[in-house]
Length: 87
Image 1 (tube, rainbow, N blue to C red):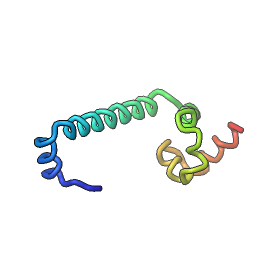
Image 2: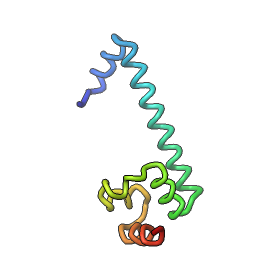
Image 3: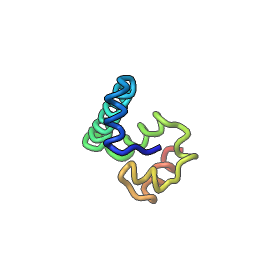
Image 4: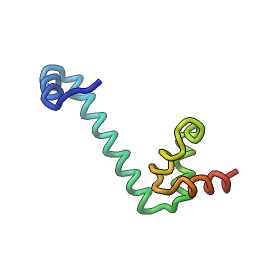
């Protein structure tokens, strides 16, 4: 589902529950981005990897490894080393 900005504004002006949902969703995204940024600034790669797997235990087996590596800001090889070290 995709909405243009003008359509979103129109719907939000007519339906306040939808406006509330978009505001809530935007705030959640902002908070998640801030947490991720703080994690990058304050934690090493191993800690970020461990936190990610603690939050999403099934992630390593369901998401392609190159996407997990990109999310963590490491190479695929480094991700493999982290995985093998944590076994």
